[in-house]
Amino acid sequence: MIYLLSDQAHEGVEHLPLFEIRFDTTPIDIAPYDALVFTSKNAVKALGSLAPSWTQKESYAIGEGTAVWIERLGGKLVFTCKDSYGDRFAQNIASDLAGKTVLFPRAKEVSSSLFTILREQGVLIDERIVYETLCRSYEPHDAPPKNAHLIFTSPSTVRCFLKNFEWDESYKAVAIGTKTAAAFPPSFRVFIAQKPSIASCIDLAKAI
Image 1 (cartoon, helix red, strand yellow):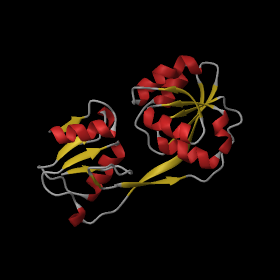
Image 2: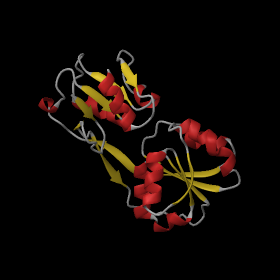
Image 3: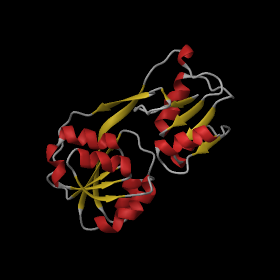
Image 4: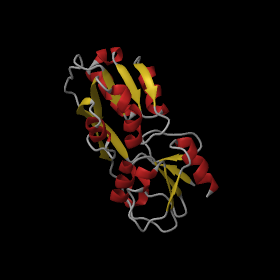
């Protein structure tokens, strides 16, 4: 049995949402900024409720999932990184952002060095926490059964799972990328999806 431990369900697999998103409600003045850098769809959603005029600014997306939300909410998408890793994303966009004033709306906890990399590259960038990820609480009997294949889509899903449940040696863990895999204890065996997408994770979970 395959379990998707994400905030969104997916057809054909069991859904066990491990966290919930809490948006900040403090308004943001984005008038001084030329461009916005997004590393998650939740940052897009949060900014959409805090500063409606964000759609007039150039938006840079870390991956196609984030890009979809930028376009869905009417944003001005100018770049989508095909490699969904924050550090590489920063390297890809640094030269294009040179001379621009940039806002990075982000989660309370981030796993990449995007902000530091862009600042070291001379980008005039500010960051603002617009949401945080909170673990849901489950009882021990809610744990996936033995031999389940578990798909982890972020470091937060790893943290929240281990906060709620004991790890069974029969479980097989599938991580959406290297940052998520690195969130596991070193002794765990983790399979990493070929592409950083839920579809790729599901394909791998079915194959192992």
